[in-house]
Length: 164
Image: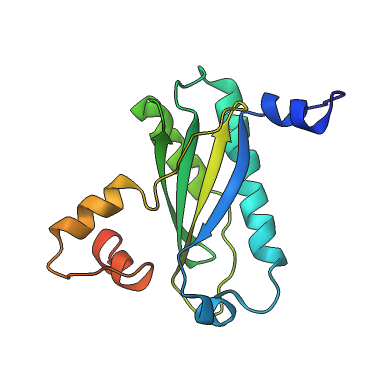
């Protein structure tokens, strides 16, 4: 996309614009899991944002103002994506396509897994008032679990994304 307008106007025309990132890793463990160099993680996040924008640009514009993209990583070749519309609807087929296609983006190589994060993504220049902390599917899985508190990513992924 070429944008000759101001940066704010350019941001408004983007199908998917990263608003904020939420890490699902305890802060003292960040370096243990991702390593000292954050550039690979930054590049992975940019690649996910770009791919989401490419997909959304070709689809009918959803009514949702935003998208929560939760990412689980067990290894460079083993990542899973959960997408949830925020403040409005998005067709299940679109969310499923986003999850499938974003999972094909090669993940960051972890020093120690698992790791997880969420991308709060504004859609077509809209900005939701509030993003959920976790995808609803994670909340539902936690409610069904016998564990009182599921700490992401370790405890939570054992429930929602068990090793086979």
